Length: 248
Length: 268
Image (cartoon, rainbow over all chains, first blue to last red; front, side, top):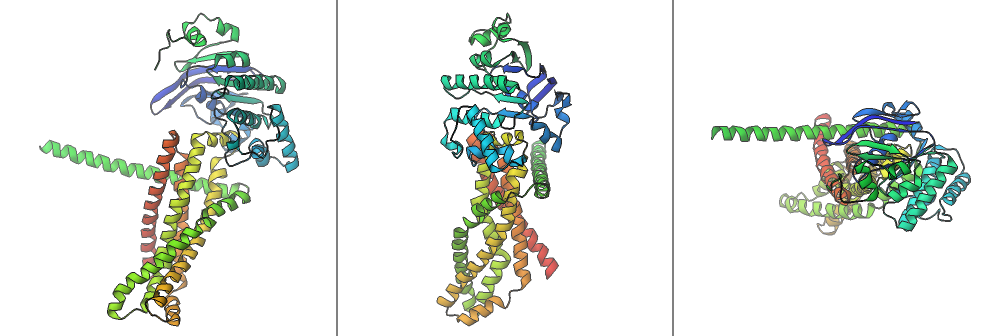
């Protein structure tokens, strides 16, 4: 289970998260929704320990992530895979080296075995035969899928998705949504997705949490969120310009 | 009037203190990066391919520009010194002046400035782009320390290649001086060679190489630090690259002054 307790985080005096609390059960697909710039990605980065909270704690299977450092943090992150918004593939490395990065770094597998595992992961995301390509030669959708293959290469227990459908066309977005859901079901992982795309959220989520005004204001199933009476949630899920959420 | 003067005085003191504080914070951050780099040199596995790749980018690719600049600097040095030396009929000392100036001072400093401008800027731009496109964060999520993976190979490559390029710059600078001395100033070949090597001692070469090692460290630390701390998209990377070159140049000149004074008092 992942638990965020009373998380506070500020950047240059500007508070982004204030007393944020969230629980994610093992094997669950949780989607965190909220407006752009409301702190969704920051929340995700706290879970994997890239960012430290100013106050509060992050517990993953009762391990306090904020107390980890050095080798313990390295080992802890082996249980995670993360898909970044822009893919964050390493420009100087080929697809093979990107997807098999951790295998090259931390396993004793031979090159042949790594090639085989990379080919398996690429096949899972619907790509094959592009091992020697460089990220610059790939389209936006392909980059996201290669990044997804990299995220699942070490068979992690928890996968984090940061805006998986941002910046790609709606059809490719739906392909990515299907992939995320399928990988979650087949690999039996805990998934946490951050998005402002409601179509994506409904498709991926077991549960949806709404981040607003620096806090999680509601957690529920997609149906509960869709039919919520809360005016903030209603405005967000319907994408209306009129309501309590004002433009800024 | 008096209170205005006092206010200006207090503001300027506050400004100066703030600048001094910022300098020490920056120096502290570089010291931490140096300590982490040294730790990872011993703690991580040797990344031979990456180190060789960086050596190629830093050393082999910089060689043509080092060759050209040092050759012409040697020539200019010979011509400028001839301007004065001929007045006192001491042309034969031009060779000694060129060789000593190059090995003790110009070779290490010119090489470091060229490498800082050419490779330091490239390192900052590369790491800065990685930072703003979340590749550095991706490295962390893949259980890899960015200092171990990105800084250490560049650190080792610079520590090896900058002194080697310095030796090349010394040699080609001397060749440039020789071409002018023998070709234009009518100093005999034998006399020029003799006057080049007679005043040269091992300590001259060694002090130059010690300087070049310290310059290599400065280039690596400043360019990597600026790159890894870039923010604000393409504009931020541009700002970081400019800052990297300017700060490297200033620190190289300051370190040169420090080491010259140190060697002067230790080895005189």
